[in-house]
Length: 116
Image (cartoon, rainbow, N blue to C red; front, top):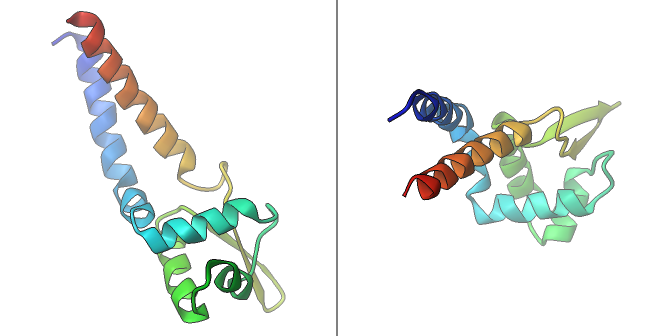
């Protein structure tokens, strides 16, 4: 294995470790549904009650899943007084790290195809 491949594999390994929680969080169907609602909403954020209504889920369920997504670095929350607004931001979350990892894996797969 050449040096370039070794470096890429080290970066992929590190990326998997850093993104493990995010992958686990987005692997759940209910959380995927919540993410879809967030993606369809105004980028300034949406409240739990609105998410629950659009996703046809209970508020406690949405709150539970949002906490998991927030802890995993998948969504952010901002406060306005007593109101919490949840949103997705490419700059403030793990989405860039996930994209970078997928691109590294893709490069590795392409490299293997080129070698063979």
